[in-house]
Amino acid sequence: MQKRLVVWMVLVFCTLVSQNAFAKTDLGLKAIGGDVGFVDPDNIDGTLGFGMFANMGTFSPEIRFAPHLGYWSKSETFDGDKASISDISLAARGQYMFPVSSPKFRPYAGAGLGLHMVHAKIEIAEQDMGGGFIIPAFEASDTSTKLGLDLGGGFVTPLSEKTDLCLDLWYTAVSDVGHLSLKAGVSFDLPGGGSSNSEPPARPVKKRTTRR
Image (cartoon, rainbow, N blue to C red; front, side, top):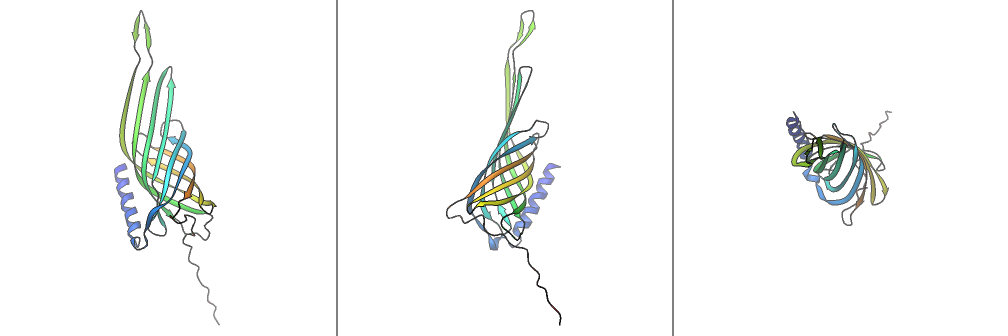
């Protein structure tokens, strides 16, 4: 089911990009930033997550290319035994910037595909079974790479001419470690990259005609 969903999202995204996108493509590193917030993995208590992102320009005036690098980890202890899991992800996300009348509040919805390097580790403490019989401590770990699908949205508002505040909510569907993340971040425009605070496409205004 997840693979089918990924395929459909790729087809939808490619369709949106292909519609008069390449005639107005403006790709290039425009801004970089960082984010921090709450990550709520499936079947695990919530934890803190960190990330870095970039504004790599636009496929069209409304569709922005925004890669994201993320990290979160969680450890739990049970009677001396310890289990931990971490996820390092690199995702290619597209963001549809909704046309608005003011650049001070720019909502967007997005989707993307990412690679997740998931590391799990378990540490079992030494156990004294009595009668001089002791089970020695041991540990085991595993690292795997998984494909994930990102779906989310948020908004951007300028803090200054070259700085943006971003607040977003994303759900990442990935085997065993699917998670919801709510983060706030700040992005900084780069010299020569143009301003990410430029006014977005406005909604067309219908002209009223008067009858004589």
